[in-house]
Image (cartoon, rainbow over all chains, first blue to last red; front, side, top):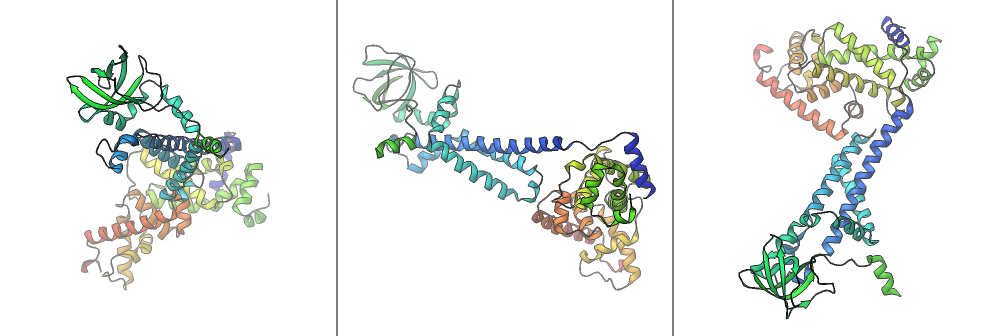
Length: 244
Length: 199
């Protein structure tokens, strides 16, 4: 044995050094893999909500807006969740890169794999209705609706005939008072308006209206719908019901 | 311990033996001390004393992390990786680029193949003189290019080994190697290594 080797062994013995226990490394590896798994799981949640929100877009009004379907979809895409999905993909890449052999894989291969897994898992969450339940949970978060930038832009357009806001006074059932998304107060004539969906119209409920602006902060509604669509049974269960 | 028997043992077997008895680690140290010393010197050009201190740290780190060694990988690449990281963090901590303290004239010879084609390398004297200049030029390269060139042309590591040492995909090794060569060739031209007085 060389002098140098002897000096190393002496140093180890004098300092009573011991190899770090295996479980410490196992725990570290588990944390890295667990973080990768969580990133993919959160990514798939984002995918499932993106799918849900795409399905939930106001397709019935895009023609009224004089917009193409592509233009409408581009405006109303859930960008917040898309950004979150990109963030989770980046996190998944970071964690997988820090696994023992993660560096051997190409960045595009890792991100591609994470995306495929997220999309498959996200589609399953959507098909089983979990995405709707997730959306339900998120809707309880204050100001969550503010994240629907496209939808807000779309419905904050009274000159074009699109108005949304919260009912602040029900009046006699012909005229209601509405506070729009920019906190402006509107006097809305709903006498001849059709309810696009069944829902309880009462003070505090947020609605979206199509119609025409008839004056300064005055609006005549043709259609009324709740701001957020009511939750439906999961797609997979709806299909099962249809088959019965 | 029987030295002759241990000489024949593989790195992986010695790792397993070391985990039961520290003395076996001496054989691993002996097997790698020269290689890692040479690699750290080539990478950093620190003085002999600092390199020895650094090498001690490297072996102590290897010993402490033996349970993290995965036998699916080569022990050599794992040890080189630890040495590489220690060397890099040493001169990052000291906030200085490696200095050219000792230059072995022969070390640049392996790099002559990647010099521009118009350099006449038939003369041995020219070769030696150029080798020294070339070695000095290597130190001008950015850290990632220097490491990949040293590992390929001096340590004669394969792409897979370099990938394991630097923890980058093999494809990236090839890309970095090409970029490093191009960078190096440009440096050689800028420093007039292809001019007649260098031949």
